[in-house]
Amino acid sequence: MSNGLDICSNGNVVGLPTLSALHDAQHNDTNDFPVGKLARCGDLYGASTPMQHLFKMIGKVAPTSANVLIVGESGTGKELVASVIHQMSKDTTSPFVALNCGAVSPQLIEAELFGHERGSFTGAIRTQKGCFERADGGTLFLDEVTEMPLDMQVKLLRVLETNRFYRIGADEESEVSVRVVAATNRDPAEAVAAGILRSDLYYRLAVFPLNLPSLRERSDDVRLLAKLFLDQLNEEEGSSKTFSRASLRLMSSYVWPGNVRELKNVVHRAFILADRELDIAQAIGPMRAAQPECQGDCVTVPLGSKLAEAEQQLICATLDHCGGNKTMTAEVLGVSLKTLYNRLNEYQSKLFLQDAIARPYSIQGRN
Image (cartoon, rainbow, N blue to C red; front, side, top):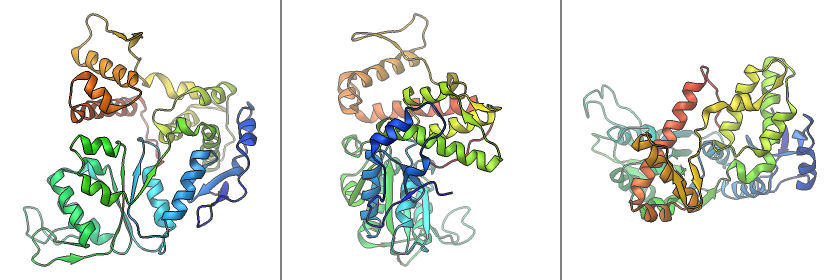
């Protein structure tokens, strides 16, 4: 489905309307959005200034062989950007292989990356190619690369420098030609400072860094993207559902902490619940935990609160007070940056689990 303007191979947007025109259209409480005027880069859509810049950067780096490091919050579409880079590369028929480093146990990640020989360890009943061999000649996408164990980061660095590696249990080296596109939802500089990302690996991966804007940084795109998702659902289901006026207003005021993934899932959830008009407020629901009560520089915690809950409220309030600067937050709280990251990851995991429990059906999408 193509509802936007294609982007040139050099990253230039063709025929994109002025943002003022899009702004006027977005603030008209109707469902007649100019979705056809969205700029399109592969499967990425956007009309805002940050997305125009991102499209241009993708257009410049995609035809090269440079490694790319994509930095962005969860839900901003990092794997989708990696896929678009591959699609716009010199050989689009070459393999695209993706691995989430945070989803593989430390004991198995070496075999996942480099493969193994038959009998090299218990359960290795046959020779298995790893991600590097399967991506030979193409692109390997390493998501959540900062979650990779430090000893594996050393081995990954060697492959990036020499294009050579050993399968587990092999006597001879294998040689590949692979472009690596890595991604992280952490600030790479803070990850290096916290000792969870090697600085030499960081510089090897970040030959060409790409920063993905959060949805709140591209607010011009929210209602345009929502209409695009709704049109896709209407086409799939043969329906003609629309957004309620209240939903259109809420889209612009809600902060979308889950970014494009949350927007797409909320539209899908509202679509399932709606007979004719989608109610976004009902689809968002009470999934977001209430914020701690803050007065000035103080955080009020009710008596009877669990210690872990009080700690979470204090950490989140301090992070907000420090403007999102995690290094400063760790210093104020008197903990290491690594400890702060571990706590924030725990809170994020609990939030996604609550989301999953709150909806009894599966919402699919890769943005």
